[in-house]
Length: 289
Ligand code: C2E
Ligand code: MG
Ligand code: MG
Ligand code: MG
Image 1 (cartoon, rainbow, N blue to C red):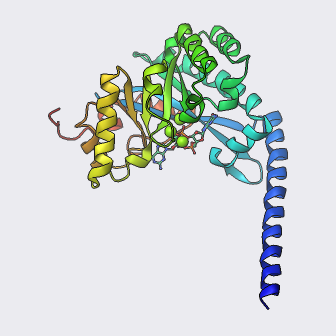
Image 2 (image 1 turned 30 degrees about the vertical axis):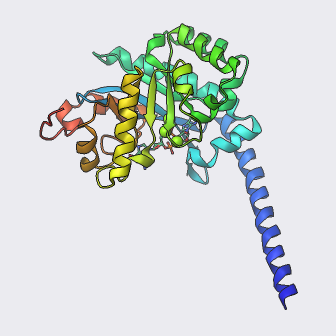
Image 3 (image 1 turned 90 degrees about the vertical axis):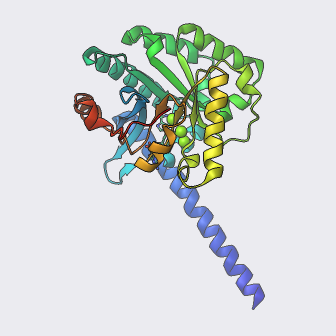
């Protein structure tokens, strides 16, 4: 009997494995079509300066599949990394985001930064710096308005060539932010070696920040450390007024999260940016900093 159960378990396991392999193959084909038929769109999520004004946006890719509907990036970015399809996708993202950034800045009275997520494979490609230069030249976007978001995984490999690549990007005038800060296993020592501009504190620390003193201590510590290192800090994933009212007592430069705005299409973003400040961010009663 035990033997049969063992076999059934094995059968279930191989079925499950087959299903996953088939799904990956299907998704890979679908991605190829998406690239060819331009099924992608960029949504933009506002990043809020502590004064309440919108300082910039983060570009987040959306895939509208004709039959399956919207497929979130969490379901295809890592596959695209594995298959190399991330390269044409990333080129499209960079091109589109820079073009949209120029359009946004043309109608904005204050400079608006554009942050884009750069995948490890994209960053490590030998031609990355050149494509960056070309896109900047073609779009006319001032390099200082472009920010590349990299994750700890990319930077952990703090080999000389990584540092050189970052220095070259900074020399263009482009900014670098460390995304999902605090979720990797990397050491803090790279913070003093790598030429980055900003830390984006991962939203996993924000959930309970107003009620869990340990999360609060971590966020507070990171903000203080970043300040002393001369880095800017952005706190991601602010969802509630309670979280925001706690967080704004810290010396944090920027915030991002559903509390302020969800990622939205370019047309909706333009409307959003035209609203008066009070309608955008409820800053509540002034807190003493
Ligand atoms: P990320 O760069 O850390 O982006 C933040 C994610 O958190 C986004 O999910 C955003 O919609 C979501 N988010 C923002 N505010 C809140 C909040 O208050 N609460 C919660 N629960 N979530 C919030 P999204 O758009 O699904 O993207 C997921 C990840 O996919 C991104 O994480 C990024 O790593 C990757 N990604 C997205 N677009 C691109 C892209 O164009 N290129 C590359 N290489 N990766 C991308
Ligand atoms: Mg990001
Ligand atoms: Mg993040
Ligand atoms: Mg993330």
